[in-house]
Image (cartoon, rainbow, N blue to C red; front, side, top):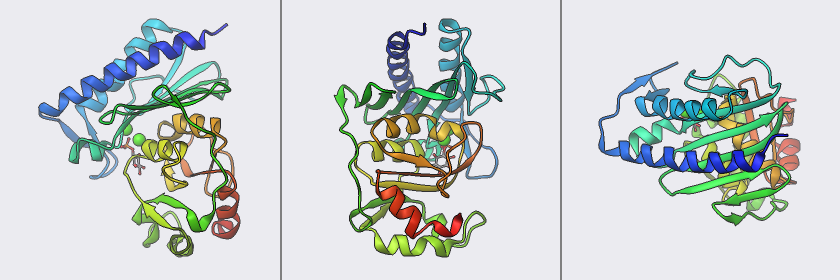
Length: 265
Ligand code: IPD
Ligand code: CA
Ligand code: CA
């Protein structure tokens, strides 16, 4: 039998220690490189942080599988067994430019089912986490279940990229939604945007292309609170694929899908 309480104790400790190391890097010179394009950044600290987790997981849980953004984990093409999905720094552009608004994101799945999810806002020392069936928390404080939301009262996270011509979506589609909601925000870290939906600071977050490590943790935390996380057309997310992501309070999810996103079906 897997001892999830013991895993949780380890992860909490590792995340806070990794966070300390990241903060110590603020006074050092970062080595910044581009990946798929000049705005897709990676630093030596992204790589070192992923290696930090992988070494500890391998030492403690040698039978577990690890999918990490920076490629130091396993070549994962199945969700069988216990799979850790890790983004060592989500919001690297913020990390490089602002030294804030980035997070460590870790989702742990067993045979495809979310078990433990963690999003750690390093600078604010806010750990959003959930254990499936046991509740979601911000540090030690339980987070209340998410209540039904309404479009006209909603503050949604959305990057301006998606309301100008782009290659992923007809940008005209989202303009009525932007007009009807109370406000829009963009924080530049998918994990933090999901944590904010979980904490009720945002009502929804819409984005066109995320990787499994961007949403693996957020999905567990948001769903534990009754929120919904799907592709933009309402289909379930696949933890082994890139996809669009629409995360929202309950009720609001259906309303936005039906009224604004139906053309995507
Ligand atoms: C990125 C951030 C960003 C999102 C990008 C992601 P990274 O992750 O979450 O908010 O818009 O799609 O790739 O590269 O900083 O880990
Ligand atoms: Ca990311
Ligand atoms: Ca990252």
